[in-house]
Length: 237
Image (cartoon, rainbow, N blue to C red; front, side):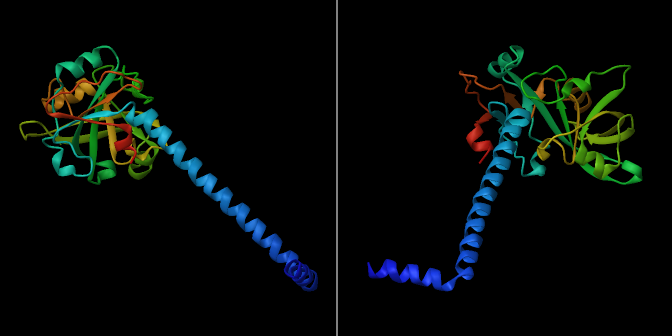
């Protein structure tokens, strides 16, 4: 009983200072817990957006593809194997072709990643429907970050220069069909999206891809030579 009595005497003796300490500590703990919940919620939201927009149910990468090494992009493409093509034909997967390119916004040289995706795909929640080609012009899709860094807006025309599979430089005019809003920078910053078949034709890479995005909840994932499946656990790590 001595210790509780001494503790109570000290609390009452300190008066207002004790209650100020109690209030400050309580608010501090509440703020810490709230911030942890906020950061976790933001992280979960970004992960869900990445799965919904970019990763789907996982991805098959060409054996030479490394998203962290742009020097590998020149060789990071190949014909889509039949087992994966069967999934694509069933709308259970969608291929993406990636290459380095250069644009010239306002007379400035800017390197980019040029990506091709099927305008009719429904595997990921990506606004590829804006890439439907009309009147022989090449439509392009960019994100808000890319639009801000280049000054491009809907309807603008811009020159894109690239090297095809033979190493020959070529260039074409494309027009900005839409500017998308997304919280996933991996499909926005420094990237321009065009129709997949158009890109294959420009690059001389018929029926080729750099990666293939699988639909969610696909039970049977084929094992194919030259292509490596990357699970969501790997992609989100």
